[in-house]
Length: 350
Ligand code: DAH
Image 1: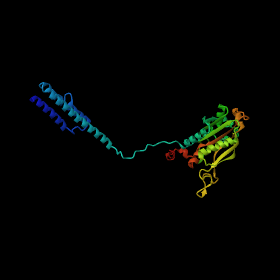
Image 2: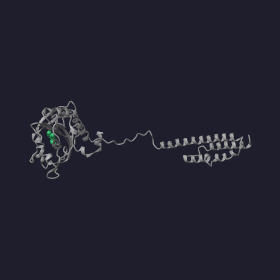
Image 3: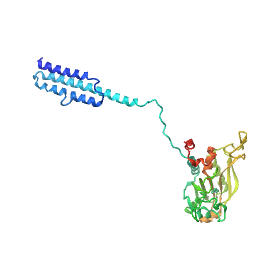
Image 4: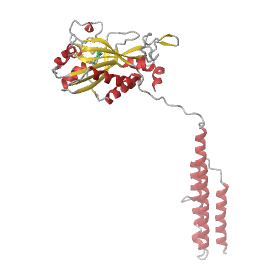
């Protein structure tokens, strides 16, 4: 072997050792890149050694070239492995910034308001019985809210005490019953609609708020009877309060229905016994019954107001307060809870 070749090969070995001895020197990927350039770059240490390859005898060139390739590969592999180590260390550092065994923070999840929950439950029960869902304005005129519903001008329901007037002739609707009128004006019988929504009254205490929610129901066809009313509302009430609920229809009065009734259900608190834990039940006040809705057969005067022929058609209507149902269902004692939006109250319905 010629001396030139020998010294060239020794130079290559030296370069490989030099590189190995730099292990651990680069503390970052950037420093490692500098090291790579120092050894393998275009003007780096290997490149400058390679300048000597061309000057070797032709017979020595294959051996020199082969060795140079081996050293290049060895150095490349070495630096690549250090890069792997550095990457692992970097992610280890990131990991050590937090404790992966710590319990996670639970994000706050919203929930539907109890009024919305009960409203949806009631609507879906009635839609299941075949009613169509309709909606209408909260700012209503006198005719839809009162006159067409057979509530004459001197009727106590029109008293300023109860009604919030926008102007002489315009009110914030005091009930959803006006939607009976709007639905019948839009459509010929047969018709079966429900109209949920906000209603407004001048009233505010433990059991009254100036705004609350009602749902109105109306069914009109030929030969609709009080029996249909009873059957429909009994099925509905049992769907909401449970199959074992007792239902009674108590004669009552509403201007827009004749005959009229109020529906009571066996008390949700005491199960109709009138007492709980040895004392008088506070929900039904010992009667065993709680009132749940108003209903009746549509008054012929209401049909006349919308141009339906009362000789051909009969129908029934009903209305109930959503908050009242929610209070009974969830055992809530104070109506105002619904509107204070205390998160501790609301999150119980999640
Ligand atoms: N509108 C009545 C109220 O505000 C509730 C009501 C009673 C609606 C009887 C009806 C009904 O449709 O037939 O208290």
